[in-house]
Amino acid sequence: MATPQEKLANALEHLKSLQDKGVLAFRHADFSRIDREILMKHNFLEEVLRGWYIATPNDRKKGDSTAWFTSFWGFTAQYLSHRFGENYCLSVEQSLSIHVGNETIPHQLIIRCSEEVNGLVTLPYGTSLFVMHSAKASELPLDTYQGLRLIDFHYALVHCSPSVYVQRPTEMRTALLMISDVSELLRILLDGGHSIIAGRLVGAFRNVKRDKDADTILKTMTSAGY
Image 1: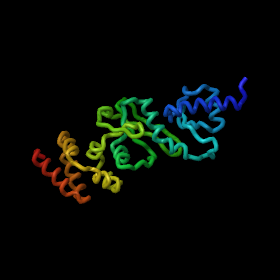
Image 2: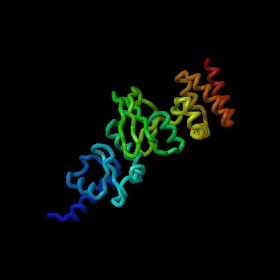
Image 3: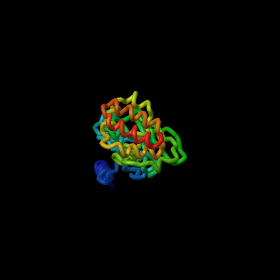
Image 4: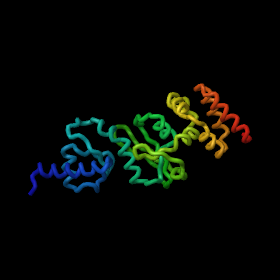
């Protein structure tokens, strides 16, 4: 019969084999009952959602959130992929935040899902996911970030809420200055007939001293009859 030390060593070896495969969101079924109980007893695993775990350093103190916040994006990506496959994406505003380099973990991550589902997923340390039904979520132009499905940068900039300009002015300024050519924005604006949004972008580009881009949008939309 294996000694307790040998059982722990075997459990850790299995955990490492999963980590070597890139697993960050561990499922109940990834471990035998014995391995799972041993790893949790010695603080190498933490349950963050029923049946879902993250790896943790065994010397962490009670209430230490470091492992969770370090694992957040990777865990969320793998959890959402397992649950929804390709039928989800992050919200417009959250996608835009990540595109401009803001990787701050939000208290609540908004998920758009083409499946008929709505609900709150409570996660540790004051974080959560809010999943909302959006019929076209799987049809939107997408990028990826650490395995997460993001709405395309240009599409997100066009479709973000007007309130974002007030609530997150630095992010919006950064986003506007990242645009090297407004032709892709114009394609989205013209395809959707978004004259009001075009006017908002004209004002926004003028605000960041990009008058040439503002004039291009204004003239193109006007010549198209808007």
